[in-house]
Image (cartoon, rainbow, N blue to C red; front, top):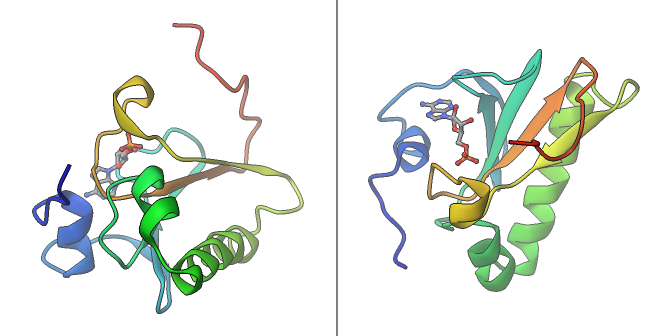
Length: 120
Ligand code: AMP
């Protein structure tokens, strides 16, 4: 599968469409999810063109992987989620229902998050 430059997060990275940014550095951009599933629901995306976790973990450089996951952790800390606890999640492919084909980590917090997997 080839990276689709027209996906919505690629457009956000190119600033062609807006986002509610909470954090940015050389490796990552973090912003509010447009359809929040929790009191806090953020997305962290790498700056590089990676389709999903599989692509990122196989093909990103050590610096990109390190920088990206440090950014995820920093965002959670800066948003005040560490003390109360939070959840991170990445969907890959059809079974997980991945909608946007640019790797992203969801961060959920500021409430009890319930069971890990939907019973539906
Ligand atoms: P996933 O199912 O893991 O691919 O999640 C994609 C997420 O992107 C969903 O939670 C959407 O609500 C979110 N999303 C889609 N478009 C936008 C957008 N323009 N700005 C912020 N979040 C978005």
